[in-house]
Image (cartoon, rainbow, N blue to C red):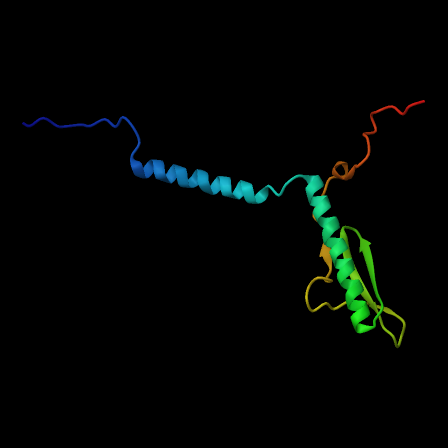
Length: 124
């Protein structure tokens, strides 16, 4: 009878290493997409977005000779147009999306603090 040859693997194949590297790369890319910067950066970005929308609304109101308004409630902001005939405020149907209803991302309250923390004592 002939001798049976058994081989013992002492490492990983190239395919196994490439699969693991691909899985790690996908995980890192998902983590980078999910990480959107700090809460303070998000709050600042939303403030700039709102300021830009206000400027756009002002320019639109002047160009179209209409009265526009803005409101914010429960994590959303939206723009309104005053009907010249009835005098009633109506939600603005925006064709370019800039003045459409906007929902704010969840930003923890502590991220919006701009002054000294409440744990410091006041002079006196």
